[in-house]
Length: 286
Ligand SMILES: Cc1cc2nc3c(=O)[nH]c(=O)nc-3n(C[C@H](O)[C@H](O)[C@H](O)COP(=O)(O)OP(=O)(O)OC[C@H]3O[C@@H](n4cnc5c(N)ncnc54)[C@H](O)[C@@H]3O)c2cc1C
Image (cartoon, rainbow, N blue to C red; front, top):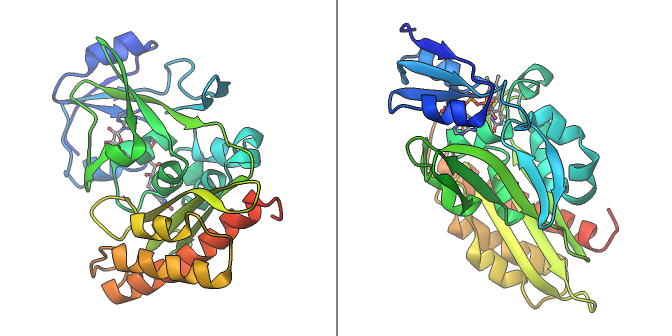
């Protein structure tokens, strides 16, 4: 690993001032240190965000829930605020690595790292979340589904930090679910999938969002699968047909973890299960 300067600022302003073009922000380091060790990233300066107060809070906001970017996966998985309303997100955080990993890894780092397989990306897309991106001259919001530009690339600008994630309040008769498959317990996902549905009083789907991970250069929405659900009441056949749409929409590749054909088949299986889970929660059966 090449030598670098290390700063641990105690305020956001100080951190933003340190973010020169050759500096990188550090959260838990579970992705960054591996890349530095492999010399894939060779920064002059590392800016540790962990001592900045209030970046690791989960708090209700007037729009729903505000999750600080430095919130640990373990905190997310254990939070009653998350588990009660945002089942898909709680389960995705619980699925990350081991307990040691989850006590280092942050949700902001998971998004900013922009792996196509990032486990919290698909639930946050399905839940309609936006990220708060803060620079010295102000804060803007970016929908999570527009954050990812390609493997390792995000819409965050130079000298901008991801400071929080905002999730809309969970409406009545709505539910979400998360599914993933892995090769081994500690591996990243071969495929992951999150589904969100909102039902009308008559049980008909008025809103649906399905997001797929590890089957394209970025996590992606499965628009035709969503279209297949809207205006329908639940039936196993409808869930299966929507899952087939999702499998058609996936853009998987062969790599060391799985072949494209296997991934496509897993999209079908996991999407069906995620849809069933989201419906169960929306109806209060879960
Ligand atoms: C053993 C092991 C198992 C793992 N298992 C999984 C898994 O099952 N699922 C999964 O999704 N991931 C997994 N990962 C990957 C990793 O743990 C996650 O992506 C984690 O959430 C990254 O967060 P971090 O805080 O460690 O980020 P860091 O490594 O600190 O940072 C990651 C990247 O994001 C940037 N960054 C961090 N915070 C910010 C911010 N607030 N604003 C702007 N940029 C920022 C950094 O500069 C860096 O480029 C695993 C990693 C390991 C080592």
